[in-house]
Image (cartoon, rainbow, N blue to C red; front, side, top):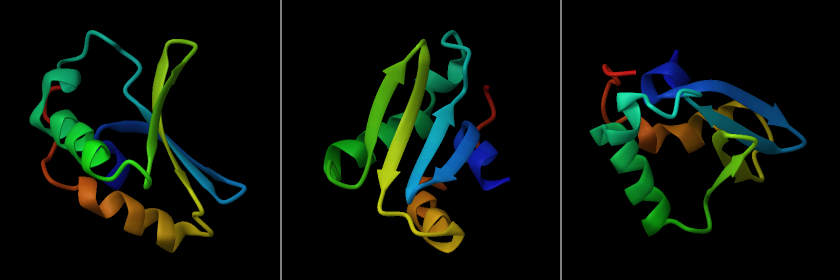
Length: 87
């Protein structure tokens, strides 16, 4: 649903931490898309709100202090800029 539209393959909410896993194919056109560029721009302008990490060839974003699903949806709201079409 919302996560797929943004370009995430998987979301995990555990211990008040939301982890959003990007598409696993590093050759995907998604990483050159306007959507991914918008996410990078958001992270540049809001460095305390989220963090991007690559671990074991997987790229993901982490949000801390996310107590529940409503807050998780709220944190993802700024990324609903475009619909991803070139995954």
